[in-house]
Length: 245
Image (cartoon, rainbow, N blue to C red; front, side, top):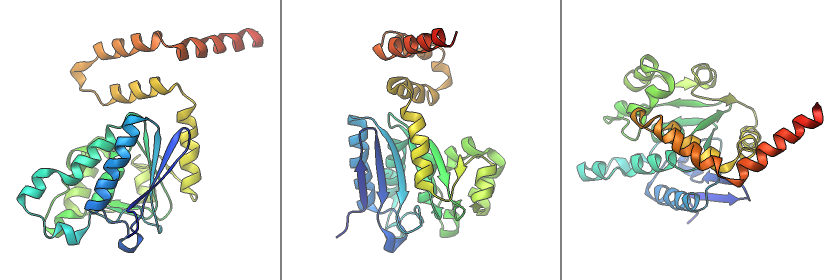
């Protein structure tokens, strides 16, 4: 049996490969459990993560064979919604490399990422109502935050599938690239060049509820003001400024 998820780790990033090409990387229980293991590693040792699918497909959806057998109690367990929410809450940014189809659960996994880079073949949408169910793993509330209510309703209620140009135009994709992996590493390079704790706290603040601000912003800044990283980076900035003058 092949591993449903393959992970390559370097000093500053994780590369996560969805590995069910025979099923167009449909998200089944084994893949969910493997992604929970990945999240545990990234929570323990925070790093930038990139997620991509094998075989020219990101993830064509949840595994329909398994979905067809699920009942009320399975839905209440939040199998997919739980893992996608955990991915969204990871300490460091997550970059989705959206090659080919990202439909249903695959689209919801993409929505949970902080950044999405597509290819010219990208197709993304939520056709769940056509199967008698709804997009219950984040799309029902997360998508309108990403693309706005009118377009989100067209995707969720009328089955619209966005191509790469459309997804880029509505900012669902940050970039469209022929070589999605190179583009992903280029973005990761920009992220890891920043102060790691500043990135972690900024991501947490970004997703905090409105009434938590500005108190938590001030507390986070107070923490950063005391770090060695802040002092070293600001000293380097001032030293460079002196040289230029």
